[in-house]
Length: 301
Image (cartoon, rainbow, N blue to C red; front, side, top):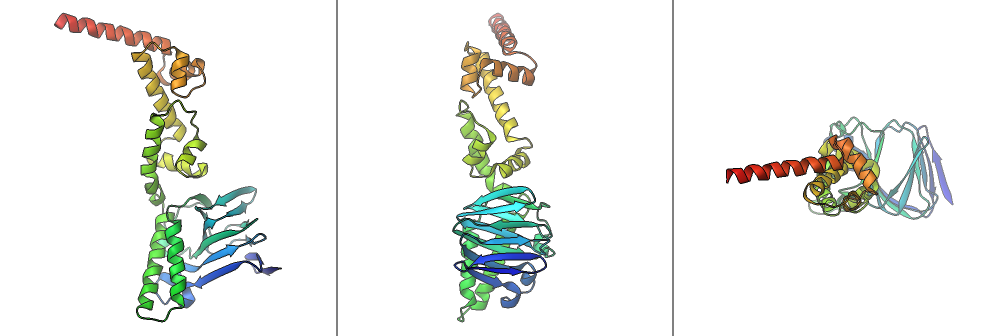
């Protein structure tokens, strides 16, 4: 059986076999300011048939998919969030999400006017791999457990856990914070590509290599390096091609194969567009320069 509930900004379809633990911050936490940062939060074990529809919902919604998959729809756009993903849904926007099977999520409703969220990216929606999903899930689980505890230090522990949740959410949501988590991964990725240029790299494959969705990988790389992943890959290929042309007698097809291009023609076209001369012309100029340098060196000696 599915329970159906509806009000002015939300409609819910929740099967009986779903299980949720929900924390209302304004009701249970008497912390100065914190009740204005997080409205409610929870951990949900969901089954097929679970569906939420929202129209101009008053809070930002953050969902971490801990296990399984969740399907999101905004107008004509649809996406699938998988285990390890974070999804951000901006306040005052329309969307719905549902499951087609078992799914575990950790979720938060954030108060948009709270100071902690004033610098959130001005996006209606984003989805990407989370840097902190496991930590945030454990923190909320601990806080839910502490809510039923009446023992020494329980109030202080609740306060500190709630503060940590806000800090981790800020790490995840504020501009630039999430990019910093991936800079070392980007460096490792491009170093790996430099040593494996013969592989037919593309943006989707690069994103997969660092565990990110393509839709987030592209702008994250551009923010860090000031250029697109494809532009970085192109520069690496052309630099290596130039070195091969200068120092070897390899045919264009062989050079193309070593840098991951399909043919000598593809290399010739890309090289001339980049440097303004064909590979043949570049090789001729390089050899003339090398001969001139050798002649000058022998005269000096």
